Length: 206
Image (cartoon, rainbow, N blue to C red; front, side, top):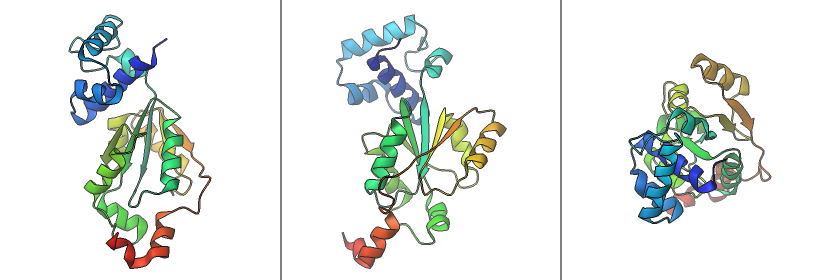
């Protein structure tokens, strides 16, 4: 049975494998462990074959010990509905990866230009404590990102139009056995559209 600190280290390595961050910096940021303690823990994980000899990448055993959850959305204006949904998604596994829609996809989905650029939205979501990694999506094929992340669970928000069947079938095409979870919101009236409707153009001046 892995300790929570071991899971944290494996999660940090998984994230760094995808986006190239420094493993030691990521572990320090998440755990506040000393360099000596990090070294000792990684030694143990290498010995138990969860981590490769390079000390920065996961073995198959290490990767299979993590439950990765993938969620997505536009995330133009972060509101309580987003926070609840992302917390619920994070509770389903050990790692939460969030994909923000590109600006072009956001326009198609929302029928308007996003207030924040895709890079700004990525930065906003990356700053949320429950999110381990935020990526900008692929316009032509959402399953390219799914294939890179290889989640055990794909979490859909209560208001997302993607159908479970579409996600499951798409995952099967890339030989990924992922479950789909539909998340409920206790505050469905909290939405970016409602916020924009209430505040109109003045929101751009906030």
